Image (cartoon, rainbow, N blue to C red):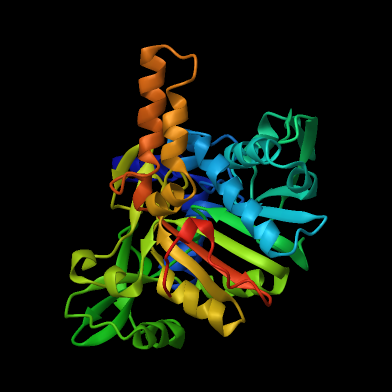
Length: 398
């Protein structure tokens, strides 16, 4: 009797997402890790990113929330992109995965202070699967920002907010499609090398507990991806393959009419990503600023993420007509855009020594290679005449 009661108690304590996953396994016998990750992060029953009550900042920090200079420097790059497109009267910036709107606000605030022709052309669209700013802004469809432009005139802009999954609502965008820490959250397939073969990691149940088993890959694309990268994987190696970037890149290529795609995330080129230093994979979970390697605990309550394969992101883009226009570490990108000049300007602000030091420390995380500065920045371009060197990638060579 006691054992039965304990079992009932376990069921009652499970989250709806946990039960959804168990039901899927009971129906199919096993599921891919990508299916598991999809439910954990995006299930409407309470996935990590679909739960309106989940404050992401309570779990981990980001570059936009560290200091607004991050968005201000990106605005400088966007202004050059606008000029390279021929100063169009309307220049769209579509941010996908805009979260609480921190990056949107800082970019728009900086953009409104730039020469008036750019500030008048700028149209900012903040899109998210489950926008955090909807909680605090009465589900409004836009919010306003006001500033003084480069010509000394007061200007304002409404940031359009869109609740959407992917790029479905958008078409023929002229401007830039932007994402920050989005690709790392796309569901990944996990694999292991056993007896010289690529085996996929599946999620199943054993004695009522979630566990892993190996099996033949669920899709031939997993083996094709790894073979195409030309990486050597020794016996026992474990890693991840992000097949979702193929669909994502397809959405980008079909949505962008002419302009640029700016992707900022943590990751590596394939040669480094699939090296010995990552022999057990790169999957990491974040829960209230604690780091874990166990995705099977706190289901729906923790973020699950893996390093981005930027080589595959570039190659997939090139197959779809996107040109790689720049790739570097975030620290280098921001430095080229004038980071240290902004750091010097901090000294002229009317701040107490304590507040100035806090601001300086926050800014330095953006360029420190052991912090956000080690993130990667990729720009892809679509359209003729956009191969000019971008200021954020000074002296970059493909």
